[in-house]
Amino acid sequence: MAVTDFYSLPLVTQSGDYTQETLEKVVETVQFSIFCFTFPFYILVTYFMLDALHRGIDELSTPFFRLCITTAFIDIWTLLNNYLGAMFPKWGWGTRVYLFLDGYYAHTYLYFAWASGICQAMCVSLLATNRVSAILFPSKHTRMWTSSRLRIAIAIQFLPGLLAGIATFFNETQLYRNSKNGVVPSEIFIGVLFGIAGLFLAIVCIYLILAYCYLLFMLRKSSNAIKSSHFAKSRAVIKKKEVKLFIMSSITVTIQISILVLVIIYATSLLNFPLDTFYLCYNAISDLYAGINPYLLWIFSDSLRKHIFIRLGLKKRRRVASSSVVTVNQ
View 1 (cartoon, helix red, strand yellow):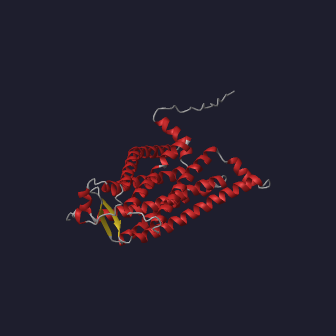
View 2: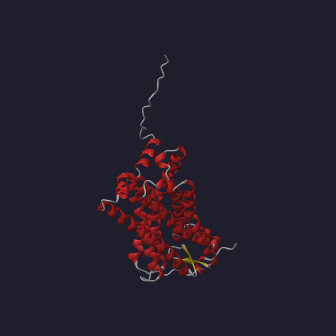
View 3: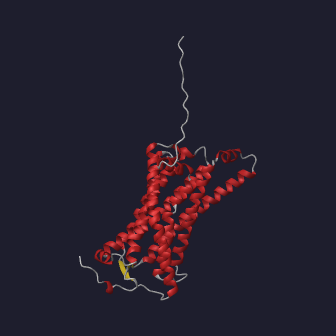
């Protein structure tokens, strides 16, 4: 395989604004510093979630935490793909390797970039659905998320994205060079893919907004209607930890909607983003989207935080006194 000549690549459109270049450097430096801490921290949190699942800890073996584990694998892979496929070549790290791989590198990165984006959207949707069902139907929640249905939910997390990403292989790729002696991968008809991704994200976001509106409506109705004993009872059963996990999923939903807004702005050329500027915004939001879950789990899940402290030897497990039955034979 011949190495592509770097200077034969088309040049990415640059604004030439010193202030923007300085801002870009600051944003990417902060972004990479956060990544260097987030990546091992996410792996650590995922390990302890798997450890709790293996040990059969009830509070950390629920369908919600099982979905969090599968989501973690997608998030970690998204972070790796973003830096190995976009950030490092953009900064000029290992340029000869990327030029040698040429189309293979571009297709691989773009496939996982588009596939993981859709997978993340499905993960957020399922986690939000799980929390909404836990609050609205606490008595039926366990039956709704049985092991067989949970397997279907996990398949929904992966399959749509992996299948949709195949579309990138039917499109021609192109490497661009930038002012940092780096390369930026793109596709010739990328506007079509952005249109498809924007439509998919729009459908998912509309579903999430409707689900949250329905939740708020039913909770408000249950607080005002005296005769609505079912929802009054449901509100009484809601535990504090369920509400905290619901807030956690709501934050990720908000980030997903912001990604949809960015895609719409770029696809419709509302702000006439140059390619470098778009990648700066998209990579920053993508890092936030993929890396925020371990921090949210740490903040909002008391059970997981307690388990990690116990496993690290920073906290002692409380021992429940066992009662013994003495049989007296007359």
